[in-house]
Amino acid sequence: MLETSARLLRLLSLLQSRRDWSGPELAERLDVTPRTIRRDVERLRALGYPVHAAPGTAGGYRLGAGAALPPLLLDDEEAVAVALCLRTGAGGIVEGIQETSVRALAKLEQVLPSRLRHRVQAMQAVTVEQRTPGPAVGQETLTAIGAACRDHERLRFDYLDHSRAVSRREVEPYRLVHHNRRWYLLAYDVARADWRTFRVDRMEPKTPTGPRFTPRQLPDDAASYVAKGVTSRAYRYEARVVLHAPADAVRRLAWSGFGTITELGEDSCELVTGFESLDALAMFLGMLGVDFEVKEPPELADHVRVVAARLTRSADRGHGS
Image 1 (tube, one colour):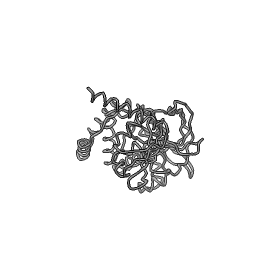
Image 2 (cartoon, rainbow, N blue to C red; image 1 turned 135 degrees about the vertical axis):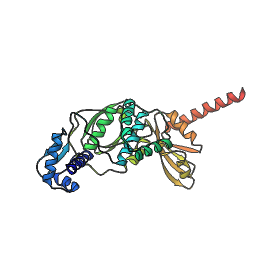
Image 3 (cartoon, rainbow, N blue to C red; image 1 turned 90 degrees about the vertical axis):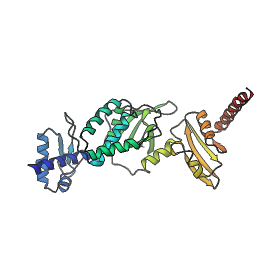
Image 4 (tube, helix red, strand yellow; image 1 turned 90 degrees about the horizontal axis):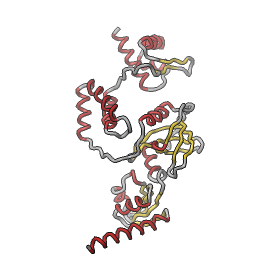
């Protein structure tokens, strides 16, 4: 009986770890016969776990949604990761989950073995988070998008672009990326037949989700691809500027969230960046502390002159007083 109970727990853990399993795969993992897997699935169903089965060579087993949440079986690394993420959620990165994150964290820490509790506390003690405001994203939206990514289901949504125009999109969602205080979705846009990055706070997902799709090869590491895209395309103004300073020196000043840097020579490089306003662009370039030439857009050069004149007048007035 003890051996059977332990195997049922392992089977439940496997069913939780991914969406679909074939009978032979589960039998190989648990070192039993497919017949034993069928009997164990019936035992789980008798205990109230909704395990769905599809016949045939393409069939398999899937743990469905039931009336109650089944016990989650986490290994050491998963438990630590969940605890740290709950601490982050309690700090308010995702709208509307602060209180529930605190409650869930209290339940988890109550049952954590002491060795894992010490690891979580040590990580928390040496971690410093910079709290800066960003666009609010509801947990329902993140959950819906995350589920579509996990299950490889097409996603339909209304999207508000930087010019405030609304369009209906249908995409194959791949990854959610948190970058520079914002949530982004990396997806393959079906109508445009190309990869796109979408700001989640500008998305309004529709239900139900679309049909399942076969995942494509990602164009790059998801975080890197999003970082490159959002430094320009996600903002109202895209700027291309030549900086008269070594690329390595500029990279220490302009971190990845604010642009991409290409070396042009020993003492010059090109910066591509984007902001919502010309004022923000001009101030950012001024904060770099190096000489520069504006290549695009033309109106940025004029605006830099306006800002420079304003700062000069303010400095003169202060000196005169």
